[in-house]
Length: 316
Image (tube, rainbow, N blue to C red; front, side, top):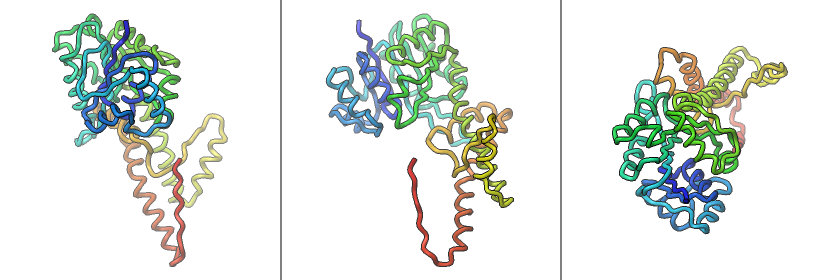
């Protein structure tokens, strides 16, 4: 019997994930509320930029394993891959409203034995405190007739197709049976290690991956500020310090790059502000860096005295 899978959300995670499943023989329905995206996909053209993705999409279309729609259908597996932006509140907490609306949209199509996977990055305890109770309200017993898993995406734009296959995958099931159900889904194409855990640990581990990087960048940026104040070349300091076999200081810069690094730490902070002062300080430092860079450039330009200035932009 062929497996049917429905993905809710066809952005930078949902679409490549859908294509990868379709490539490996799964019948996939991709659902998105954006009518332009759905129309484009059904005309054979992807709506996002990712190396190799258009070619991969054309291949699965030839097999007849993928179609796009604005409406879900019955399936064996449902994957939620929708955005989770920050709320506009004191600690910029995780807005799970889109996740919950996605879950609401699949309720009419759920049946006993289904697996529901949330790939969206979410705050700690979102599965236990929000998603699980919601699905139980629909009459299901999690781990018996419905399997609920948090499997956070961990891929780098530009290398998504490669990393979907080769990266290790965290399988955070609400129960051991849920873990097994999640593993059965991802072993379709994942060659990396399947790391078994519960949903709470999976949620926190994804957030800490990005928070760890954010804090290490903050340390480098604070060092840059101190060195600037004391008239010390920060790059020389880092290069020399990194000669030590147990030291690996990052390079400073105008904050942090990408979408997730500046967002995910707040999901932890908002859940427990009392015990997250270090994470909050790291965010404060990195958020201050654009203005620090601008002020530093202004100071340098004061010495130019009408000379021509050439600006180089390196996109790496």
